[in-house]
Image (cartoon, rainbow, N blue to C red):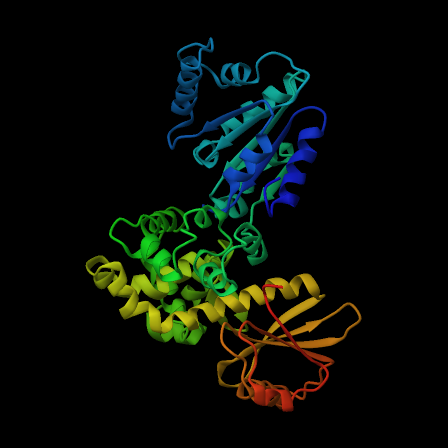
Length: 431
């Protein structure tokens, strides 16, 4: 079974074992591992795969028929959808077949004729046992437009499966040999995207990997991300402006975005809503927003503001000038997200709070109502000044806690031991 995808695999297997035919929609952004999941699931099953091109429904039907003829199937030169489906499903079999259609959004964005024909065919041919998996990277379209597009046809869809990013703990399981700090620093950029993880050179340093993947002249990942954004977002210039503003971190508040962009607050709010629906941006505190996609956050933090130098300089020179000094701050925000993943698995509620000087901490509650405050320092030592700042913040809001947890990867300052009570514990994200 694919590491980290046990629940998704169980969902697919459950529908495969059901009697009769089913239609599933499996979606998730590029690089999240949909193809790997479906390949592992389809292993040892009788599977037909088809990748839909971006063209009219009629042309697509013609192209699919041509593919089938090239495979030696008997089908007319200008087939109907019923002929295509009949050719794909084949003769009655004791084993259920799996039909995986990639980029299925191209089949439905123009009209719903294909889906109508698919549903009609499966209803009229009860002897056929087929699991149809419609898969796409267009998550925003699936969640915000698909149901209104297909209307009552949605009742014939057996289930929806969103393939989400993998947590940091899975990255550690897949790459157990690297140091914890190196894993954290790479996860800060690549997030939970196994499609990007496989591009890593494990023997190389973080700097070398980032240079190869993003900064060299032949690096393709930034261009791929730009292309993906342009497909998902219509008014790219407006969205780029807002994302660049948020990536600056000093401008994550609505008023700061208004002052920098010149857009009205109402306009900014509408675009932020769209970005949140696409899971590119999230509200981390009241009125405060962050880019939630690690890959896009890195691009708008370091590459987008320095386009000329990025295109002109060699990768190592660019890293030294624009990334090295600020990278630890960038990683600290990602470290907070890793801590949040762990806490959400451990506690009933997890809420991010803002302390003095812009610091943040977590307030957690277990099922018994016990209050636990969680602070974090990332890959640097936790100091007595950090602890004092936390205590000051808690006193300012008269917060009484049952326990304090500190996440840190490089230990804590010796002087802190004198201030620590029995209710303080230290943890690592690697445990």
